[in-house]
Image (cartoon, rainbow, N blue to C red; front, side):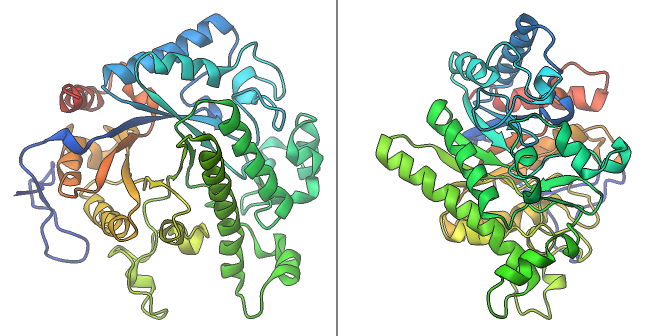
Length: 419
């Protein structure tokens, strides 16, 4: 073991709020890296442009597979539902505007089916990444539109347009589907099952966007809360119950399908890095949180996502915390994040992979060391139950003028070249 050094000062790095040094193994052995993946982001066309030509778009999908193979990856987590829409042939949701340029417009082929076909040639499995609630990706004020105007601009097959009363606004004026609505939950559930039933995917994958980061004002849901709450149930617990109901329902449907068909489709969640922290829990008596700065956003309190409950209840098969922080981060160091998730995953017997921030490499002073990602790998292998990594996001694996990122790319290829 050796202590991690800060790349600028060469001082030893400690765990948050203590003098306990961060220790990593000195030699990298990738034997536990069973899951080696990359997120391919379609929202805002982050990793893929609008399709203007079927042939060139297919080539870009082939390039994604080739790049993943070049880096010795075996999973692609492909975003197929960025905003109540579809990157696949669906009767329940319209084609995505991020695919064809206009919501509902047929791009001329099925990107998900094509990607599955091409990836299988390289032994790469596809995880279908979906966002359950998001409808608009920009604040309505920036679009110069009222809510009803935006909804009316959507395709006639968009659930939000068909059911405007099942939508609410978050704290900055973006539209989401109403998590408290049984109709919404059923629609999301049926959307997920439609994909599983028609495509040879390895897993369904949901990221961290449940109740949004820009909190939904209580006024948006007050009437629903008053009419649907349980006796003595707080508003916060009611919101968490809404999300729990969705996760439980999806889990049951997937398990039933697997039993009936002999398939083994998994259900995975990629939450924000911090579930709960001890510093904010002294008055609640819950002492199982992580040891981090109290001012950081939390899944449980801020996004109303009780990930640990889902793990305890076996509703999800794997968890991928988005540990998008370097070792030297002052408030949420990488080592503390990973250590906590490794502990809770072991207790709940949940498969654990780590989401790592390739997109930040070379972007600021804390990410200027090309060995940061490899050191994270070295630290991860201290925990036998960490089974792999997913990197955000695909475009950062392409040729770049960022020297730190370019060096990190080469280091990563060496890490996984024998797998």
